Length: 363
Ligand code: 13P
Ligand code: SF4
Image (cartoon, rainbow, N blue to C red):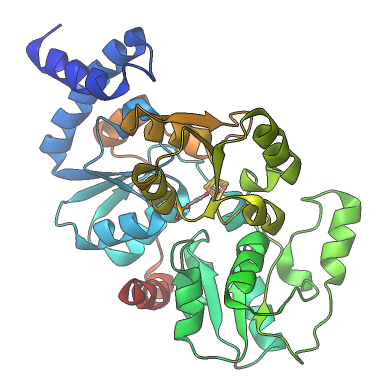
């Protein structure tokens, strides 16, 4: 092993020896050294979402964090190139905030079921149906949807963003479960109006369920404070109350953490619900013997590596196929071959910028 690779391998092993097999660490240390060299040559910064696999997470990113955190880092960087180890909507947000930089996403098809669940035409249809009602959009959306919104939010600031508007009623898009969780947290009543014909949702889900979604549950605004949309995270929607009951029966002293993209039944039965950063903080600052993380499984490995004295249970049959597309090999090739470049048309970017920047100011 050359001395640089040896040093990288030692650094990774110090963190990951109980989580990643040694043979993988040796192989990935070599790629990490190559990436760091390319990073210097290209004057690049690497941002890594908390869902990145442990060898990547603990070797090449200059910054790791949740969506809000990484948006801030993207806005602040003075490097020429931003490599986003995350999914497309995150890389787009970086481009929206820092348009003079080259933003690269290592896997072209790393999408998100929430971002796919709504179009800009859907938002325009909702605004036409509920004129004057402000639109809050989760950052897990594409730039053209953000451009139609008054303000964005992430899972760590959704309630604060809604409350900052001081509005009687707010349109909150597109995550059904995040909306229901926020409605419960803020004591608001929520409705899901009939889908507009422009939605393009048809055919994406089971027929009975699709019919229910299309009908909506009434557009009468009396007593309504939140107007939601039926988008879902394909990962977090899979966790159930039964999963929680089964794990509690096996590990009575387990502490359960659920991301707010889980259903209200699941977040309600969990001990804590918060953004990926908030979950990391919670484990660090508490002292339970067992934790169960109801979120993308790789984050459990990353938390386990940082807390070797704590036992992390994770339900790894539920994975995010999009986040899992980001590999160290593709990150190296992104820098080497300058791919995949994220572009946002300027007229859309300017409007989306207003919504994202307004959120960042709230914090
Ligand atoms: P966070 O903002 O909590 O990092 O969540 C992003 C995400 O996509 C969760 O599925
Ligand atoms: Fe999207 Fe869900 Fe994957 Fe997060 S975990 S990127 S919300 S599909």
